[in-house]
View 1 (tube, rainbow, N blue to C red):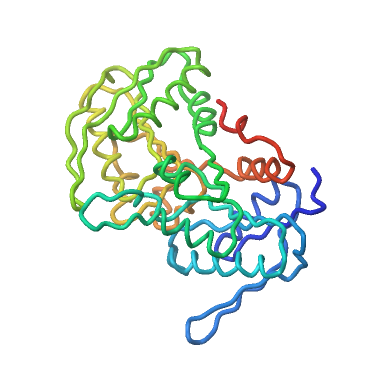
View 2 (cartoon, rainbow, N blue to C red):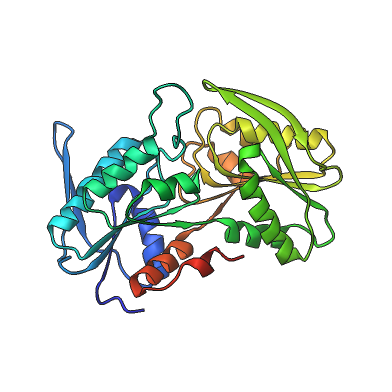
Amino acid sequence: MDTEHLTLFALNASHDCGERIAASLGIALSAHEEREFEDGEHKSRPLVNVRGRDVFVIQSLHADAGQSVNDKLCRLLFFLGCLKDASAARTTAVIPYLAYARKDRKTQPRDPVTTRYLAALLEAVGLDGVITLDVHNLAAYQNACRCYCDHLEANPLFVDYFASLVPPDASITVVSPDVGGMKRAEQFRQALGRRLQKDLPVAFMQKARAKGVLSIGRLVGEVQNSVAIIIDDLISTGGTLLGAAKACKDQGATQVYAAASHGVFVGHADRLLAAEEIEKIVVTDTIPPSRLDPELVKQKLVVLSVAGLFAEAIRRIHEGGSLVELLAT
């Protein structure tokens, strides 16, 4: 790989993620400084020359014990702006988990469309492009950004995992936890079916949410005597997945697995891992499972690395290649 003009940073809150991606690329993270001031303000700057270079900055926008989503967003914005002031030729934000992606349309009078506002903030500091993984609404993400916006999918990772886990003679049904996720479930169903050389059935849960109140209806589709794999883009409190898992078990599924690209795990998400209806929960490492009971994590949670996926995307963008092959399963 030609790295003569490539520079890779990871802000402190995403340092571990950055190290994994850098290792997959076969390069080292570049040095930078993040300084905190007594009044809560901060500054960050590169400690290497970025003039004329192709710069990628890694920052996953999830809250943790040290920084809120907004803290991380501000640090990312300020650092990107600083890179442009330092004459970087091109800046790309590598955001494994993109905050505010769920607020992509108006659902009530005078509602904000926060996805669009976030895109405007990134563009305001001169950002050239964004790379992220499995946003909630791909069309809204692509339409919000005027810069180039590349989108990766965890599907290949999930297909690899479940193709090696489920016995060849097992009956499998792919389940979407709601109607809105049917396209995602269908893509996974087709990809896993091709790998296993089977025509897999699909099912979905009827679900409605109004003003934060979730109501789960019946399961539409056949799961009896099947291994049910529930697929979603993220897990928040886990209520949706738990309701779907119980419905699958009630309808005769032999085993239930859950897979989601982003394990946000807020509120009472521990109850999802403790649920006897679910064999395993599979997520990627875009968000560390720091809010969960460590013992439950050992027993139930499988975390797949996206480092190789992001590293290959960075390599192809830097070299002017295509990302289409990365989405093929």
